[in-house]
Structures are given as C-alpha cells and as structure tokens.
Image 1 (cartoon, rainbow, N blue to C red):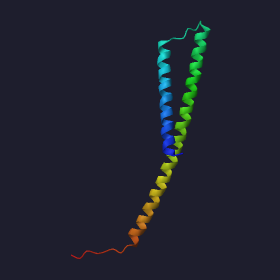
Image 2: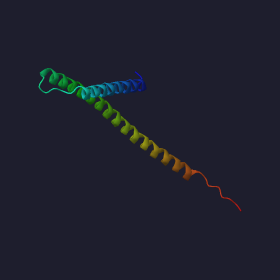
Image 3: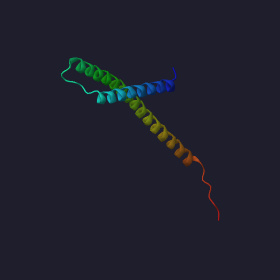
Image 4: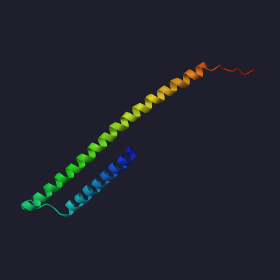
Length: 101
C-alpha cells in the first residue's frame, strides 16, 4: 500500500471523526441531559464514551505522525550536515585562481 494514499485515508478518517464529534457536541448542547431520567443519562454516557474513543484514536494517529515527522527532520538535518561537509571538502580541494590586476 502506498504510504501517501494511506496517510490521505487516515486524514480523511480523522476529519470524518472530528465532524462526527463536532456534530454530536452541537447536538448535546441542544439536548441537555435530564439528570433525573436514567435513559437520558445512559444516552449521554454512551455518546461521551463514543466520542472519547474517536478522540483517543485520532490522538494516537497524530502522535505517530508527529514521531515520524521528527525522525524525518533529524534525518534531513544529518543529510544537510553531510552535504555541507562534502561541499567544504570540495571547496578546499579545488585549486584557487588568483586574479591579476
């Protein structure tokens, strides 16, 4: 599987989960919980557990992407340092031409 395709799919899923969480939160603000009604409490609890699972899943995905990005940054910095060393060695090794005035 192509990693860019997989990343795009994950981003789409996270976006979908965020929309679901956002929609359910706006519904919750419209439908206040009646603490005297056990069914209302049960429904609110189930929504909270469902939202928590989606948020935890999105967090894990973002945490993994962050770690991968950090590793990639370190590798790029190492490659840059290596290329700078090579460039300096070539610059020192090349004969210098003097300008005659």
